[in-house]
Image (cartoon, rainbow, N blue to C red; front, side, top):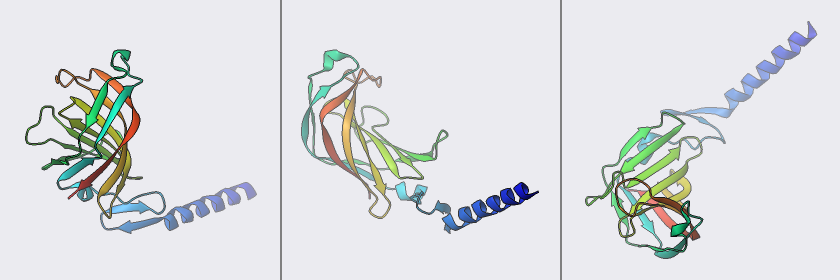
Length: 180
């Protein structure tokens, strides 16, 4: 009988802890300290990707034939208006998809943002180099920006929307990704 009382008390204490840890903020439930409070509206608008100009060397390519190839990421900002935003079917995240007016591949911008941590993974098409740059960072809801570092690329040399090779870059590339 005493073990039932201990279990009941433990269950009540656990329930109390969960109630204290949660708060209701408009249209989302935030788990205090664990949840960044991301909602779909935070991601709506024109997305702008601004790389720090960089020339890097491809390394650790799946097909070693491209190891040592030099690629340049330009610095003019790339804008993506009228992005699509979808909820993920596989995780607690949002997907952002966009393209420029002169797009070669579709989508040219893909960003996944986790709803709980605001961790973001961006994939951006660089037309001059025929490759996607992969960047990681945290989405800041206040500034609506991701201060990202980019450490790898997916190459599509024949621009047929099929990845020809995946590689690391020898030095990370800095990028600022924001919603205006």
